[in-house]
Length: 331
Image (cartoon, rainbow, N blue to C red):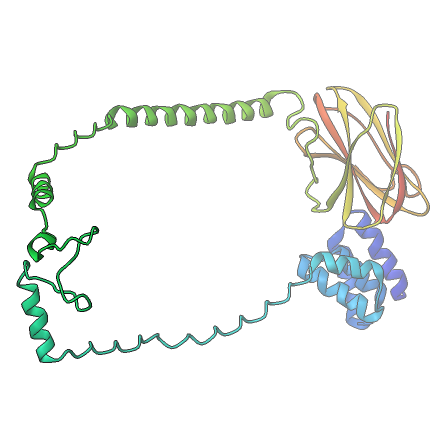
């Protein structure tokens, strides 16, 4: 059997969910031919982890540089790392410590002058002649005044008043009233306890409603059915409606939601358009996969027919083996 036929067999096994058998076939092909592009692309679908899938995609790009599909998938698995920040520049040298200039020495006063100044300061009532007039201090009306009358004396009364004021005791400020801490702290603790109890009651109520009301998680919950694909569309579809959409990435999926009741019979069709190959899963209101199909509708069309087990919001999750447009209807 040629390697091309073996790859086709492996792809058929992948579609039927027999991934281990497909992996064994693809591994055998690559042992004999490490440059088999189709086998490396198939290994991406059966990789055991993200690192292994990334390694297979690198082999695809080695054999087919610039392939858009492989490049997009590798960017999702290995996002670009940010460039390290440049090292911080060294701090500028600190300026030298400031040293104040030395104070100038006090002026030298001759010993004779110092003595004269000291003597003048110890004689508060000494007469002060004016050098120009040759007499004593004159009044404004040019009447001669004796030195004793012209001498300015410091009145002792202001000093006495200041001294008396400083000696008088000042009235003490009344003591500040201490707040009643015990009562305020008790009210604070009670308020916090009430708030915590209210939050706990709200959380428990939400959990009860989510668990027991029909629909479980409620409308709008995003489920992935355990496949790990990126959910790029969440939309409501009514019974009897047909809508179209497009998937351009093997790792993306769309969620279509509708309301169902227990015992209701539904027929879900996901038809391939323009050579696409859609795959469909039906999830119950709790996000569990209850039905799945790939080509049951003929050709590459998916078909699910079943009776719904309970009331709630159901999700039809669509992904692709071969990307492209598709149509979906729920009856």
